[in-house]
Image 1: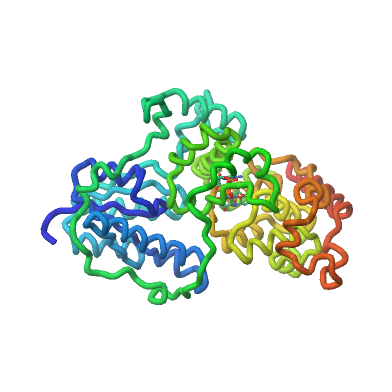
Image 2: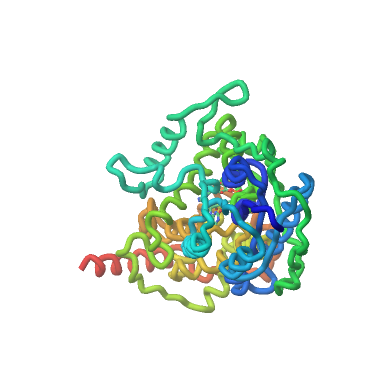
Length: 449
Ligand SMILES: Cc1cc2nc3c(=O)[nH]c(=O)nc-3n(C[C@H](O)[C@H](O)[C@H](O)COP(=O)(O)OP(=O)(O)OC[C@H]3O[C@@H](n4cnc5c(N)ncnc54)[C@H](O)[C@@H]3O)c2cc1C
């Protein structure tokens, strides 16, 4: 290939439409050759049966088809990103590289190394915001620091969103939710077919399985009634879009635009995603330990048999078991139930929240470091904006309130109500609550000195 190309590198943005970085690459002139790298550093640590890899593989193939409809193609390579880029520099005359930012610590280190490598070959590396509506430094307290409590964060988020309105489709929208119409410049895509085939799952050491992936569109009725139904795990009352937000198979701006007209509560939920990413960006230490450092020395029980029972959905607490089985079977769990199972693990079983965080990280199709870490720290009481440790979920009241006729429980725990189901929970509420209160209280008092 003799003509210089601009490379657009897809990562958490597996879609060509409304894509900030791709739009900028095309607008700069082109021709733009899209790229995806199956990252050996990540894949080599996963088990051979991983629904997420299968999902990504499928979406990468769809992305390639979408580019082929425009006479272009997607270049797909497998390897360590730095090695792949060293090869690409030899294989192509690269004019510039464009991509969208990824805020996880591993990705930030990787991108710096790639940028450095490219700079040595005089190739510019341009990165953009696409995954979030606002990055951490865009929503700051009046004195300049990051927010650590959700409600004031949300208020400021909203003020900034509305501070800059632009005309759109006969009305107006926030400048920050404007779509990036990549289709306008589709003729600037590199034209041709790449010679290399997409590496197969088997070549990368993965088994072909069929994950159950929800659609990318949600019925408007679900969003409209979201306030009423979002806490009821027995019905589809939430959007189930999380796997698509995670991998960028949908645009956050598009979904936020729709939410604004339909349901403010839903928009607020989307903002939790920005909020937890903001926390991870501003306090990367949360990856390794509690946000509230005084919680670092809780003397967890960490009973391995109890942990195994929790993972398998065999605790004898019906709603906890239903949630864990839903997770194990589908890779997704309802938000209300995520809170209940996390509370049961960290309070009643007194097992380190990081064990639970790790298990979710292995199993969730929508696994996102920032949201998962934030959710777990919240449940354990050591996070930002956490409920105080002494407010401990009563699983029986949660059951009565959110699944009163056991619709959800019976769906996932068919033996519930038969002699095959444990008659007693591993740890009963009253006793577990009192133990947790005592242990947390003593550990916090000791931390204070
Ligand atoms: C212990 C725990 C761990 C979690 N781990 C993850 C995770 O790894 N990845 C993940 O995407 N979400 C995580 N969540 C948040 C939440 O449970 C899921 O986003 C939600 O259940 C996904 O289903 P949905 O798409 O139907 O959500 P909806 O209710 O339809 O919400 C729409 C979108 O808003 C975002 N969202 C909603 N609630 C939250 C929240 N509390 N925090 C961050 N984003 C939110 C998600 O992107 C979600 O898809 C976790 C929550 C808890 C309590």
